[in-house]
Amino acid sequence: MDEAAIETGMAVVGSDDHLVGQVEHRDGAYLKLARSDAAAGGRFRWLACALIAGLEPGVVRLSVTAGDAEAAALDEDEAQRRMALDPNGRQEFGQPDDGRPRA
Image 1: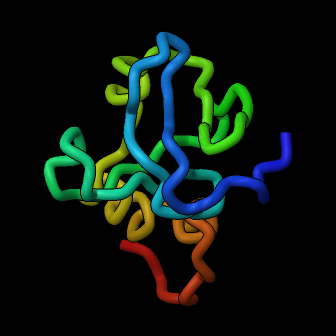
Image 2: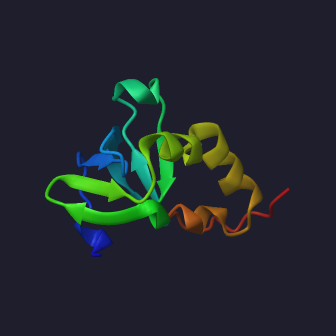
Image 3: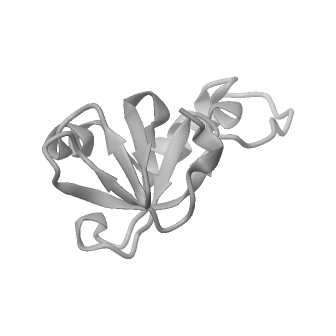
């Protein structure tokens, strides 16, 4: 699968064909989902790219059901916590390491 083919606005669909959300963009090892869809509640969510089963025209298909994907999704607070505490956390989300010591 060519993860570079993932584009903003693509639907993210579980293995049960239920919609999980829409791609905002790829953040390192994660897909950042748009906060504009109803399930997002106005907040960004991140899904591990490891959950991607394949790509179809306009669709990112997951290897898990939509419910399991929602349970596995990281919210903004958890993503920020991981970037702050894990020495490799920023890189995991596709961001450069700022070189600051971690608490």
